Amino acid sequence: MADRDALQPPARCPGPGVAELFDADSRPVEAFAAGSRMKGMAPMQLAPGQTARSGLADKNRAENLTELGYDASDATDSEVLDAWTYNVFPNIAPWGGFGPAIMYRWRPWADQDATLMEVRMLFRKPAGGPRPRAAEMRFLGEDEPWATVTEWGALGSVFDQDMANLPYVQEGLKSSANDRVELGNYQESRIRHFHATLDKYLAGEL
Image 1 (cartoon, helix red, strand yellow):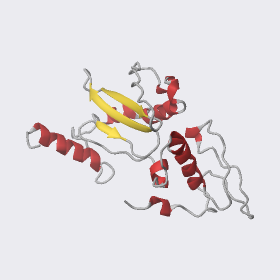
Image 2 (cartoon, helix red, strand yellow):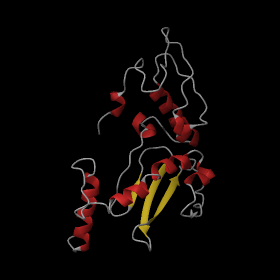
Image 3 (cartoon, rainbow, N blue to C red):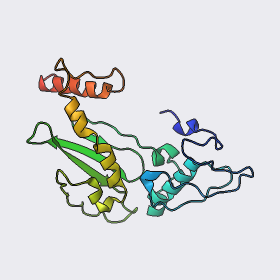
Image 4 (cartoon, rainbow, N blue to C red):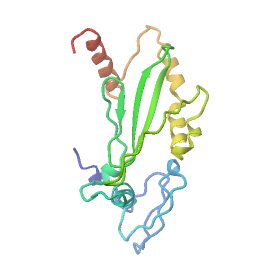
């Protein structure tokens, strides 16, 4: 795996819409609240010369590992910060990393143009502590926003943003003049691979 932490921009190279994090004397300044998707996050103090990325990584190590009794010395910045997902055939997509993890599962629905999408939040229990019972599944109605799941905090609104375009994507699947779905060579290669694997599975080749 490439060391993504080595690909950071210099500390004095602000990203789009982000104020410069250090003044000329490199005095610690109050960091931004990590973007609109993390509204309500308490501001943090950066040490001289520290980037926002490394500061957030230290914060996540403390909250998600150290404070729960786990050794965080081997956890890289990427593993406690970055959002990366695996697609497991045929219908599961777990997120990686040491933070509270998300896992998706899709199941068939009576309507062929719909599916049951499950979103599970997986939290690490305190080291040596008892394993709590799993939370009961909550079903959302077709017109019920994800943001109504208040237990997720701001995450529900993130899902609403991500899901808003899906009805249009579904319509687009049926709008082709040649009755075919044309997939991009690179960006949609995972979709193509999924359907190729599904065809082999249905044909008894796997």
